[in-house]
Amino acid sequence: DGGITQSPKYLFRKEGQNVTLSCEQNLNHDAMYWYRQDPGQGLRLIYYSQIVNDFQKGDIAEGYSVSREKKESFPLTVTSAQKNPTAFYLCASSVGQGASGANVLTFGAGSRLTVL
Amino acid sequence: SQQGEEDPQALSIQEGENATMNCSYKTSINNLQWYRQNSGRGLVHLILIRSNEREKHSGRLRVTLDTSKKSSSLLITASRAADTASYFCATDKHDYKLSFGAGTTVTVRA
View 1: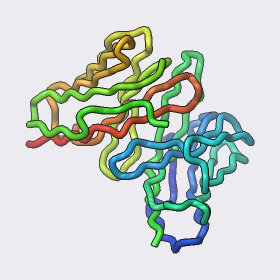
View 2: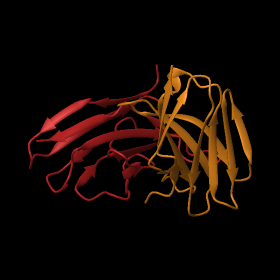
View 3: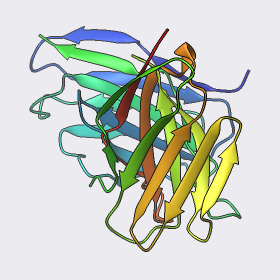
């Protein structure tokens, strides 16, 4: 089955530690995204990548880093510079704008990070 | 930046009733999408309506779009317990950056 796999599902870390969240897709999608979700708030875009070896900052990129070395993979590192990293992190992918101009996202199941 | 805002924040209905939620946004869009999220899970795309469309149906879902008022509504007819979830609108300005609202939490009581 095609889809997006995020791991780990739950992650606990101490303050000051960097952590990396994995996101893998086998949908052959060109574009990939990382969103952060906090209780009672909508999704906020952290980073996105339209093609391999290229990525752009979203609305809340500070304290995060990404890489896009392979089409299938878009890992997110939450660095110690991120002031409030405890959140639910969602990875998504899409074919891109497509001929129709619509950008429909397919999401992974999410990773919940708790910083102790 | 979050462009879409859903209303109400929460909704509780009896099974079989209809559920209506609204989304308002600020700037021009290419299309508007609705997603569903079950508790602790990822979002699932439900329906997309383009800026030149006024109404769209998909099964028990009906979406309207009024670009002059910058608003959209999602109607779920004959609700079921399985419809219990949070529903998000997302605006697409054709720039890869979908903007999501804070969502409407729908509870369907048996």
